[in-house]
Amino acid sequence: MPTSPCYALRSKRVWVAGHRGLVGSAIVRRLERESCEILVAPRESVDLRDRAQVDRFMHETKPQAIFLAAAKVGGIHANDTRPAEFIGDNLMIQTNVIDLAHRHRVEKLMFLGSSCIYPRMAPQPIPEDSLLTAPLEPTNEWYAIAKIAGIKMCQAYRRQYGCDFIAAMPTNLYGPGDNFDLLQSHVLPALLAKAHAAKLQRAEAMEVWGTGRALREFLYVDDAADGLIFLMQHYSDEGIVNLGTGVEISIADLATLVCRTVGFQGSIRYDHSRPDGTPRKVMDVSRLAALGWQASTSLEQGLAETWRWYLASRADRQQTAAA
Ligand code: GFB
Image (tube, rainbow, N blue to C red; front, side):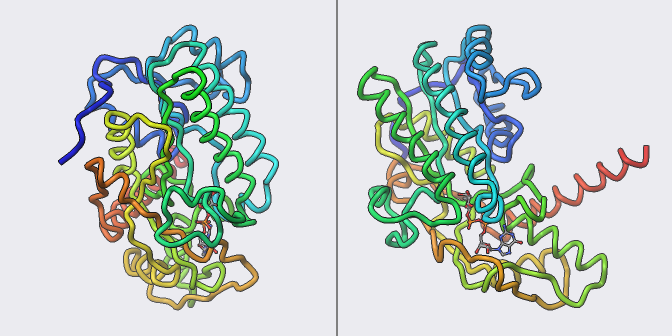
């Protein structure tokens, strides 16, 4: 039985910071059902790393609630090779939005962290209280430390100023609007794109990074958006809340599932020169379940939906290019 709501989004001015990203665009889609006014900051005129631009945007639009989904994000290779951007940009973005949310008396803010904030060898499933109990995963510690700083900032502003700022920790997300760039993306969209290319080229094999033995949890992004909006309406405390499915799969099994979805019948070749990263990171989702929410889209369903979106978006791009 869900806990009773503690915050109503109806008729509120709700800013989705990062509205064009994977999770930000899903939050915008899901908010359409909440009868609220959705605010978005055009990237060309509001650089969230620039405090004055964020201040002016918030002065003009007067958001009452904020989903802080804007961040420099990427997969294991992007994190490992662009550490300055992953720590620097994310610290600037979140510090501007969180501090100015306080100064502009925003009623409620949700900060989006990530499952990579937890120790590399955290107990599995990972409970929220394992944060900062052991060393981080080296391939994404820069991003993780930025996200941990954002969590701590929300907690500090709640303690010192009474701000209703909460923090959610989504697991690996995927779905429509994902980044399919083979170097910068996360594993699931990368494997979809690789299997598609291998099928078109009638290749013998498709390449998968690492050993394939790493285990990951994947949450469909429209489920994530629903869970985040549920949390915004039903949760107000300084503790972080994991958002996931509680189900893990090996990269090898994911690759097999992707090939089946795409219809690629070749073999899989592992590139051991690439890192596996964290061996496992499935999250303990009991805190959110106790509040009354759980994910509903299976990996098979989500993968099929994402594949359909990927094909449609490629067809659109090809039509545009041909026009
Ligand atoms: O999704 P991913 O890039 O990031 O990698 P993380 C997950 C696993 O998939 C790793 C393997 O073991 C990769 O070696 N993998 C296999 C691949 N083939 C590929 C491929 O073609 N591309 C990619 N990208 N991986 C991320 C963090 O860690 O988790 C982010 O880097 C964020 O910052 C996200 O926190 C939630 O799951 O390892």
